[in-house]
Image (cartoon, rainbow, N blue to C red; front, side):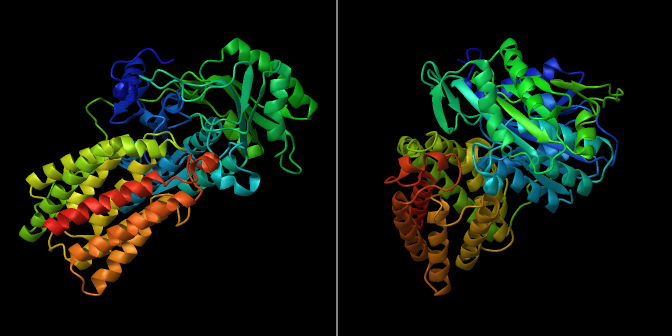
Length: 571
């Protein structure tokens, strides 16, 4: 179990601070992440990598010449927020654009995608690199649904080398995407991992057994089998990867044997002894193999094997020099560290401009509504967690309570500063996403920010503008989250809410009445999700367990809609 911590909620932040202190000659701390102490030249493409904490050396250990320019870290096993990703990306930007690299998980897809949109709006060319190497999570025909696991190292190393070589952002992106398409991974686990402050592991493997295909957060795998000798484990790891060997491939491969946190190096070397022999028997030539810990899962017992099918260009970038705290290859010329007082820009330089009197009044109303939402979600935290635990990790209620509380506080502070409705709602959305974490936090963040963008700080928040904002928030969720009605997500409640609200407002119905009708539609739709099977996110592999139970995200959205409806009626 994880034993060394103070406040479990501060574990990730404290670990980040400790990493930066231990590597102060190599990295510079910034809020939520770290930069190279000696940045690349002006005009260079910057590679930002990141994801949840708990996976070291991923992702902080990759920051260095020839690899990543920066890393952003979320809470343990939780995506960093949109504003955190955007802030670290701004700090890393050298003028050539930014590649945002992450493992393909719902929360990361949302937050990195929303951050890319925000950066582009500021004039920074930002591209997305979602690693999809885990063959256990989806078949070849559904490559885009695969999780990102230890293939992260292979893909990021090649992308970082391409950027270091001075390629422009189009070329770096093309090389990185080709590397991702050529990477495959498969893992096994012997025992689960324990989150800081928790008394039991996230999952358990039967004593004397091995679980095949688990994800690095403990997501379900393919099956469990009795424990086998190392030679047989090697065959189990290799078989699904060799099945995806490209037709006509020349046979040169980059290979990473990765420990998940509790499997010791000598055990990995025993396993590599058999893997190397079996690869040779298959006619494959291994180029610069890596054996060790590269993408861990706290104290999970297990390992994964990753193969990248090389061509000449990919091989050159894989073998290129790199020098990061947790990964070194060849010799890198020393760079010049930036002086501590030359602080990079992390957040946009902006204050809160006062809104008009009418918009300030609307902003105060929004802040009051968010305060009521925070109270209601705190009361519903346990109920929402129980619903989520049916097929998820049971943290939805906690995330909604934390996010809404932070949003209410941010809105109240913005109101005191004289902000108008658009600014109040946008800042509340950022705070919700920052504090809630996970997929639901990201969704609420982009929804509220999108909603706020449809309002203004100069004009009254009319019913028509409120309805337009609802549509803008929904559009942002659909665009960045990728869910559609029927996927068993909050979208199933959000779509009928917005459709009903817009129809009623366009017909001239007063806002309070229109909102009540929309809340009723959302509630009915949320209840109906009990008959659906989840098609996205971590609940997808446990779909049958959720049948007969509504989706927690849809239920919480409908609850919020009802709370606002009640407040509007009272007003």
